Image 1 (cartoon, rainbow, N blue to C red):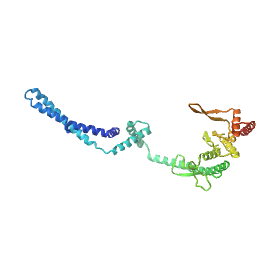
Image 2: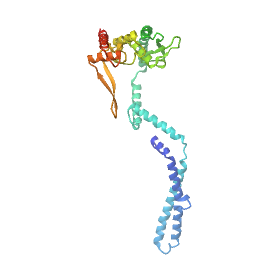
Image 3: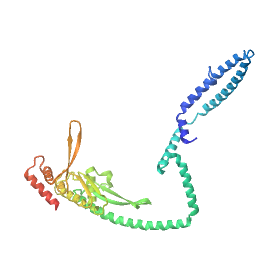
Image 4: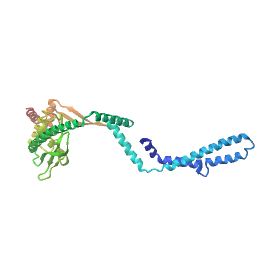
Length: 346
């Protein structure tokens, strides 16, 4: 019996036991059962068998039927008694079925095809064993391992050097972003086993307060801190980065004045090699962008939606002026906005 059939049987064990036990009672074990009724029928017909020979013939058929039903009842009783199975077997089969389905998904076949796949792989392995020179393979493996270690050790040396340089430059960028209390550390951490990416992994650690223990950046930095730390990293590596698009959400939160302008210029520098999308409320940052989009919420009686609109040059001036002056835009604010945008274009 296959695993699925055994699982279906055990999952419906109570129904099977009930049906088999009740049937045994009806056939021969109950107070009113079919075999006792047939015995009564045979007794009545025995009393008149001498009167009509045809009844004698039918009695032989009845006797044969009684024997068959008696044997069937005995087999059914044994079946009912055999259904006392350990309930934990269902859990075991559940796990086994899950394992089979997982293997089938892994190798892209149906569960029924796994045995055929196994036979095919075993045959292929046997053929490889016959046609392969193990000694030559070991030699090739040793050569490949030496080449790997040579490349990996050079990568480790380069990583150690670059991580120290990166740590210094990112910390300098963080100071420019008014985060002098944050210390960044690019660490090269050895792996327990060599891997596709070399003998170690690179992790970024930060300490957000002087004297505090440095921890992985994702575990200690807040949302705003993460954005600015990310900007500091991007401003250092952007010339060599392969990331095509970088998104910053209010990276300038909590800063203003000269620092806001530094944030904008860092974003503009990163934008020379990648597409930079930035949500900002600071005119010093917005004025440095190559293009401007305004996000607004539109609400009707039944639905709310978000409107994204690309601004034309005059609209850009008005939007930067609104950031400077508020809802009431003066000509002085527009003039200031034009000056900021002009400076940013340089």
